[in-house]
Every structure is written in structure tokens, then in C-alpha cells.
Length: 461
Length: 103
Image 1: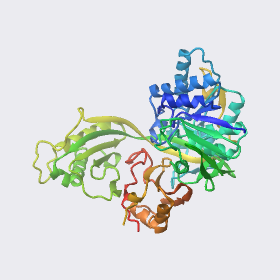
Image 2: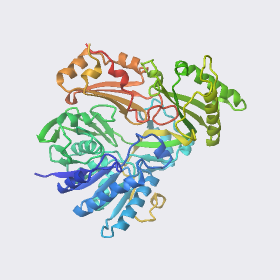
Image 3: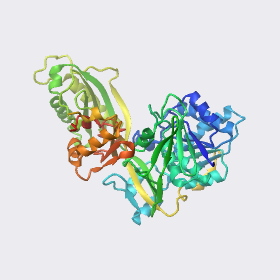
Image 4: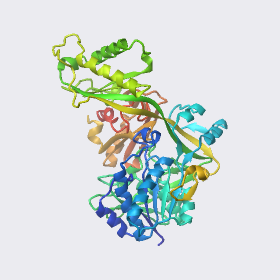
């Protein structure tokens, strides 16, 4: 029976995976090793500031094992959403690590291809003017030339089409810029003639590593095998169990709908799937459906800097202060505004987060009873780091010594765990672009090239 | 009357992209799943009250029997990781559901 096996080492490249699991995965002779490196979960900062989700050291540990593993079996290695956000700088960060690994293992000489996912502002503006760009998920997210200029660079999630071309060209390693998480997995299935719906659904399960198991984790390896009319998934670590319910439930993960999923140019319907036990710890999935959408849309992502932040972490143990913490904090805020009369009070923000009271949920917190001690985090958001630092220092000193009504502990209100107490945090970003854009061709914004050290998007774009 | 947390085997919240939070509730067996679904407690009115949502902000409540799970998705008042957000991953927003009483 025709089949194709994919090895997913972990849910995010750099999260790590046990050597024994990976060795088992390789022993099953997979036809490709595919790993997703991307996520927007950690917020807009990674994309906006062009930094990675994981440390360089962690990424290298994983990449080294994956690249040498793929080379030993002579099967392709595909990395989705390189560097976490998949922009040019993130791809180049990933390639710098790969270069270092190859320099240390000179017998490993793979052909490496890059697929870029950076979208030029002009292309977005052209589409905007034709009404072909709409916000996704947010009720409203205005987009215009000025916002695009403030945005540090827009990426889009590629579908499987650009990856198919590179598989055809027989690359040994494919480093994708931003990609729809399941797409690099689905591309291998479709390239070898397997069903599109099953390939995408398998990708959806495998892109999270062993998260569809009990106990689930992104830090372990998972195998998936495609057949003509079904696919099967199974963990590499015998300590994890994989059941029909655990695999079905995984479809929920981080998705807005339990069985309708949208990707570049596709809509998946998993409502009629059956999940059955194929063998011990091995789940068979059938019945995945997919349709091409009328218009092919790609998801744009971009972030812009909105403020600078300084924070302080402190503790409050005095029950007299805990009883009136909100009132005292409001008085501190007013006092700082008084001290800086020359500044427009709307040009900066002072926030207090009271952990032990309502720090996590704010006004949504149903429990009104505070604990016997509070962790207080306060922050100042302002237009520059210097301003945030100065205002936060005033908030800290004012709060520390504030003589509220009924106070008995006149020597100080806050326990600082650290010296210095004030932490300049740097820039705060927001997702300024999170839109769907209609495209005529699923490949046009995702050009690929063989990797050369001097490879730059500008030369091919 | 048992609380939802007593009946569920998994009860969690997480981002679905930077602008949505999704709550998942799973059960061990079909009978418990159906009991909760048929109780009607997890309705739009309850969720809107728990999370102070307008009708437009509550995207949907979905039941999926194959996974023995219920999913609730709503729009974040503040997008993930920017000024004013308190939960970048949206991973700790499920607590208000836990105490709901299920007949």
C-alpha cells in the first residue's frame, strides 16, 4: 500500500526534544523531517523588533540534530516560519545558525533553498486601494500608508504551493519564511500525490509535535503516515499515549472553531472525521474535507512600535495597605501627575497590576477577596525610554512613601525583591497588520532561491 | 449541583491569533458531555456576563461531539502583547467558567 511518513521533531524549533524519541523517529525511515518554527503567541514584539522566539543556542541544538538526521537518511528537511516570525531577518538568523552547523560538519553538504515571505508595502497599498484587504478577527483594524510605514515589515503566511516548487527542484533543506503552520507538512504529502485534505489535516496535527498525546507536549517527536484514504499518527516516546479523543481534541487547539479551519486558499471541514485506534498508541483519521476558497487569501502580519515601558516589581504585606490598595494607587497616580504638571497627562500611562487580587483578570475577576500579600507590578508607558524611566522612578518613590490615611508603617509601603528596582523594558509593539489579502497567484509573494551567503530579498524581489 | 470544573477533564483558554481568545472544555465521556451541552448553561448570555462581552465580541459557542468538547471564542478587548494586555498567551482566562453550576 502506498504510504508516506513524516517526522515532526517538536512543536516549535528550539523547544527541544529527547534524543531517544528522535532516534526512534529516524528508525521509522520517514520520507521527510518537517518542523514548524513559528508562532504569534508570544505577542507582536518578536515580529516588530525582528527577534527570535527561542535562543540561538536552543535553535542550534535542534537544528543540528534535525539537519544531520535528514542528511543521514537522505530525506528533505523543511523548516516552517523560520526564526519564529518568518521575516527576512528571521530567515537570515536561521541561516546563520545553519551555516555554523555545516561549517562544523563538513561532510554534510545539503542544497539549501529559501522561500521568502516578506510582502512589499506597495503591493499591500495597491490591494487596499482595490478593496482587497480586510481585517481578520479584529472588529476593526485600520490600515493605510502611514500605519504601513510605522510597521517594521509585513510578512504573509504561505500556503503549500511555493513549497511544492522547491520540492520539485530537489532541495535537501527548505527554509520557509512565514508559512501557514500545517503547509510545510501538507506540501510533502501533496507533492507525493496524497489527498490535499488528509495532508493538511495531518499537518495540523503534526505541527505541534506531540501535543495531541497524553500527556501532550510540544517538546517531543511525533510521526504521521499518509495513506490513500486516511492518515495515522503515533508518538515516538512510549510514555505518551495517543487516543482517538486526544487527536480529535487537538483540532481545537488555538483555533477559533472546533472543526472549520481556514488557511491560504483553503477551508477545511473536519466535522465528519472519524478517529479510531489503528494499533496500540496509533490513531487513524479519515473523512477530512477541504475546499479551495473562491478567492485565494493570504494572512498578512505586521507590528509597529507604540510606546516605551519601564516596570517595577514589588510586594505588599501590610493588611492596612492591601485593604485600600486601589485608592492609594489612584492617589499615587494623581500625585505623579501633579509632580509633572508640565507634561500632558494623556501623553503617558501609569498602570498597576495587583497579583493576589485581580492581576490576571482585571475588571473581569469574579473573586473580590485579596490575599494576605500582593505582588504589585507597576509600569509607565511613554513616548521615550527616558520619559518612561523618569516617570516610573517618581511612581516608585511616591508609592514607597505615600502617607495614606490610617497608615501605621511609616517607613515604607513596598518590599522590592531586587535592586535596582526599576527595569527599563524597551519598546512595546502592537499588531498593526493582521489582515487577509486577496491574491491572484499563491506563489507570487513567496519567491524562492538557492541559498547563497549573499542572498538578499532585494536582489530577487 | 456540580461545578463545570468537576465535570470537565480539561478546561483551558488560549489565544487563537492575537485578536481572539478561545475557551475549550472537554469531557471524559459522552454522557457528561451531553449533560453539559443539554443543560444550556454555556449559552451566549452566561458567557457575555462572565467576560463582559457585547454580542459582537462573542464570536461563537460550538459543540463538537467527536472530540467531546465545547469551544467558546471571543474577541479580546486588547490585542495580545500590547499596552494594557494582561495575558499575552491568553492562557489564564478560563477561571470564570470553572464555577458555573451544571444541573
